[in-house]
Length: 240
Image (cartoon, rainbow, N blue to C red; front, side, top):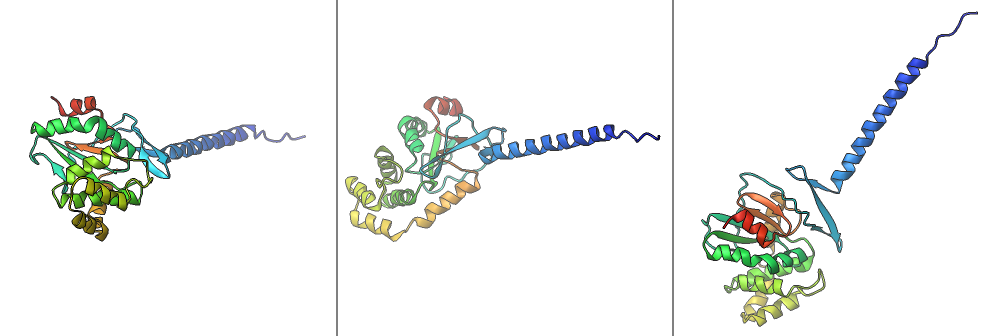
């Protein structure tokens, strides 16, 4: 009787191929799922984001995304000499608690550099959290019409409330202007007219174009730093 051929070796090869394909596919799925939770920066580090009242807020992971040769315009609201050796541009939201933390812990360090002529500091709006964020940014610019931009800016961060809690409503923003001694009629007219709506949104779009995804984000001498920067970190970046 003639014996049949042994196809066992063929079955083994086919099984090996199928297992290899499954491993490769699985690795691809895992890789895609990781990247979808954040974004790899230029150093290959993963920037992590956490939801805060349905808004994306950057978690300070201690990793800095770095770009070389990046030119970031100062915009309309900056303090110090534009030709100072160090340029610091912050993109922030007035309702962002991390931005408030930076203001309270580190902004004075930047002001020390500004006052000594070693740095120019620009604040650019990045509307992220809600409608009151837009109103607050517009209000600061309206205060700027009366030469009080930075005073109002400081007042907002030193009186910051919870996200979307109403502390930055139009009514309250007008009260803050009154507290600072601004011309209420002029300020209210400016804010209620939406005079600076498009300017604020242009700042936000500029930030997006530069890769800003969360607040606060800083551009210091052509490099991007994500998250709250401590006084020690700023001194390390800017020098003595």
